[in-house]
Length: 145
Image 1 (spheres, rainbow, N blue to C red):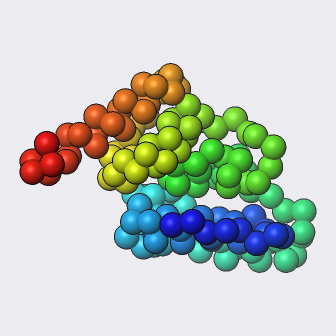
Image 2: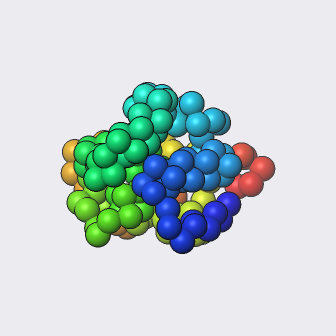
């Protein structure tokens, strides 16, 4: 589902839009699941608390670890969440491989399985993509083979 961002969007609005898009695309059954341990592992009230902090202090920011958790759960680079100049994503090659997999309409459940992997280092982009492709092949119904 393509959701066009508004011209001027706060970071809270951006995260809210990205989470809603992920739920609409079927990557998560609900926003509650996204915010749970299955998703990014943050509190469901995180966005509300952050919005309140921004109202009190317009220069308030989120930590890179928080942005990274949200980005990894969404399968996006940190830059897509923060809107800032590129930050170091934990596995930037995986984020690019996921983007390619989505462009090729590989199943979201295969992408979700690979998102749970944590090898401790960033694999080459092709390796991440082949992991997603292998997961897509292994969980395909027998009639499609």
